[in-house]
Image (cartoon, rainbow, N blue to C red; front, side, top):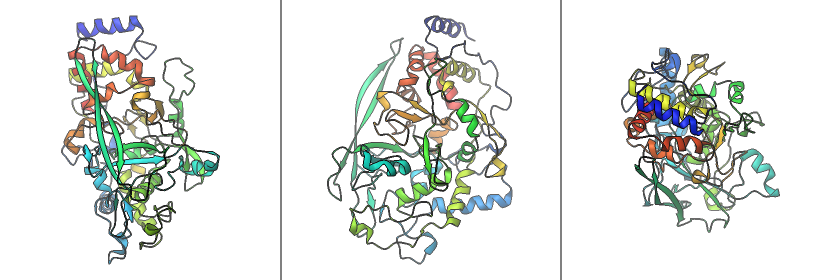
Length: 471
């Protein structure tokens, strides 16, 4: 370790600012197999298509199944009635007409442009404060939907229907200063909905901006044993480290039971299949066996009267093909794992206590797809909810997640965001324009770690970012 880094670490430990109880490890060499973030499923692709490759251990026959699922994920759906009966029934209300439009190149979405603009790859979730009359809908949906517009604003519509509104974004800014005087400008998004198509929204409507996440490694996250996730939960902070992660408990539409959530920004979905079905229903207005009927509400009768593509519009066969595709999108190998700067950054990552939430590794158990089973993976997430403080709060509960709690997002592949998605906008609403801004928005349970990072000098900041960009 460099002398400057060693002395800074000693100072931080003396001040009690490091999140973990014991001195963090020093990393002077890569761990065995560390570059293989997803075990034998890891792919060796590092261009703009790096997130669109099948798991490396899929057989040629299974790769054909992957390609079929990809076609339904990538190609647009059309308005009913149509000659393309396998892909019709779009809308009437929607955010986009193809999955790939939000998850561009299977990567991360981006916020809408400032002012009036199409919010493709960004959603606005809606709800109202729940009352006694909402007990059953909250049990099943996790929210009390806005009475007219439902749980999600659809800003596009097919002919004959009015879009639900237009999304307007603006930003205010403030400056965060490091101990050495370096300053970073942070921006706070402000949302407004103009031109509501079906009357005024409820005066107590709760809004949450959600940018589409990257799609890699989802089947592996689904295959992490529940016991392994619960082993990292500490809802009462019994060990006194300030970190109190807990699972979200959500409704499984298939089993009709309450189970642990894994997917979505607040871990509001229990399985990848339900996550996909929810996206078909709310993003494109397409029914499935899990979510039947129309996404138009009872207060939108003209919308409900428009033609549909039958019930369900997405057959179980097509849903299964999309599920196979989304389960088997491979994770690119890490780069520069032996680089001295990356190793120094990894040491700093642990000294700041970031691994307390971004758990480096798990071993998958039994999996729905045999290729995903028993893999040592390094996703850098625990899939648990953590209170991230007032700065990131959307004040919108979802199942057991509070308005300031978010699921720890996986970090694998984050260093490929610019290459794949053409931008570096991070966090649930895309407010952070780079990784350093994203770090500085961490508050709540991560406040202690943020304070450690604010003590880093220019060289240490560069080292930490080099590590993150290697993931």
